[in-house]
Amino acid sequence: MVIDIINDYRKDNGKEPIHHWNKVENDFCEAHCLAMSNAGKIFHAPDYLLGYRSEAVAMCSFGNDFNSTISYLILSVLNSSEEHRNILLDSRYLAYGVFVNNGAMYLTIRGLHYV
Image (cartoon, rainbow, N blue to C red; front, side):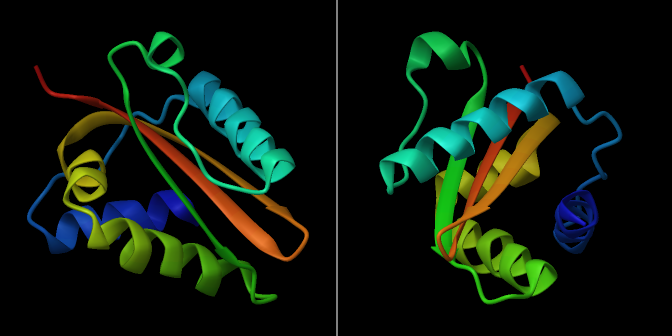
């Protein structure tokens, strides 16, 4: 679902879909979501963990519908930030993690930009 939403968003903005999703990095993104959930707030991973990757994080109340909530986080919350929008649109590789806990959904997306 996350992949479809992001690839549709990219297509709507004249970009090619992401064909390579970094599944190993997905695990790190999920771990980051868990850490944010445990802290009860969103934050970016330290630079030494990100390396050359950029990171977008978001959180909102979970409304009992995964698809609607994740769509809101990607298309409304992340889209409202130029830096986050650039990660979604200009990265050549993406990874993501999602975690739901205590009525909140946490999202981490990491991307590697074209160089």
